[in-house]
Every structure is written in C-alpha cells, then in structure tokens.
Length: 277
Image (tube, rainbow, N blue to C red; front, top):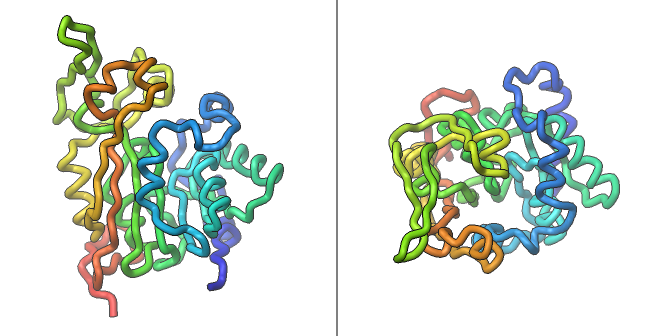
C-alpha cells in the first residue's frame, strides 16, 4: 500500500499564516514538552487503555489528531504504522519535528485545524487516534465530521478524554471519614473552562467541557458508532498523587467505527447524509 504523503499538499494549500484559528498551546509549547517528558509512553497512566483498542498497526495508515509534540505519533510509528500527525500549534509541531530529526521515523507532521483537516483527502486513513486532546478543541461536531471524512470505510477512531462526568468546570475533591470524594457541579454548563488549581494543561490553557450525551450524540451524528468504551482504573502512581481517582475514573476512552455505507461530505458544515458506493 502506498504511503500517504499529506504534508506537502497541506503546506501548499494552507500556509501557516493563513490558518485563522490560533492555538493556545503555542504559548506553552516548551513547558508542555517538558511536562510530558522526553521518554516513551511507557509511564503514561492513560495510554495503555487507548492502545488496547487500536489493534494491529503495522502497515496501517494512521492519523494522530492533535498530536502535540508527537509522542503518540512516534510510538505508533515504532509499531509499524505510517503516521500523519496534525496539530494547530506551530510551535508544538516544531518540537515534534526536532524529535523526528533526532530519530527519523518517517512521520509526516501537518499544520492544520482538526475541525476541518482541510487539504487532507477523504478516505485517507485506516484509523485516527486522538489521545487526551479532543476536549482541547473548541468545536466538537465539525472535528468529528472531519475525522469521519478522512477515514476509509469501516475505519476506526480511538480517543481518550477527561471523563466528562467527573471533570466539570467547578469540580474538586475532599477527604471524608469514608474516604476521598469528588465534588462536581454545573455539569450542563458546556464550554471553555480553566482550573485555578491544576498544574497540567487544564490549569495552563484550559479545556472545553461537554456532557457525556454531547460526545455520544456528536460521534453518532458524524457516522462514528461505538464499539468499545473503557474507564481505566488509576495506576499506583496516580493513586498516590490523587487518591480520589481510585474511587472514580479520571478518563474516558472509546473506540468507534465509521458506519458502513456512510459518507461525509468534503465541505465542512454540510449535512452528511450521502451514501458511499
């Protein structure tokens, strides 16, 4: 199977200065790279649950959506996938390219908006991965339509997000005689939020809260049907740092498949109710 080479086409179609959206991760790119660390995904507490849903990657064309500094892309390339990794942050992509130059893996890094994936041809990928980033994107519905558009028939989409039921904008935790409890409120208050106490990305750049039903319905409307959902238990490291996550899941992980016979139109925003033939 010929390798997809999207980077040149994207660069020609959408120069960086013509991408209208601006990534807040540009302001914290070096911090974010240091926060993740230079190593592999072996110590990531949430990646194993997502990786378990990927299936065989060798020889597959896979898109890493909102790839950041590229550690998921590098991991999938090491497993034999042909990876095209996209992100809105030019500075994070510069860091990803530095990693690629230090140890080439043949990853194509593309500067584009996840909400359109403009310039990437339809039916390009066997699978799309979005690891802990879908909640960083302002507009969920067009993003998922774009995912469905670039997937081949029966292609898969694996994602992980902050669990929407336990990471509402006003949320916290407290110790009680019965153990740690998580406090949540304003569950239906969807939209942008930023934490005043978290030291990771929700405190640095914020995130977008959506209800569980919003995620499920947006995926279904885009022609992406759930195959599997997991709520991973906290690792010992996470439990020691945040014991409340022993009681409830911090993260939601899912795998969807593009509905057979379902096609998305190339023009973002159009109703996607045509049939593939």
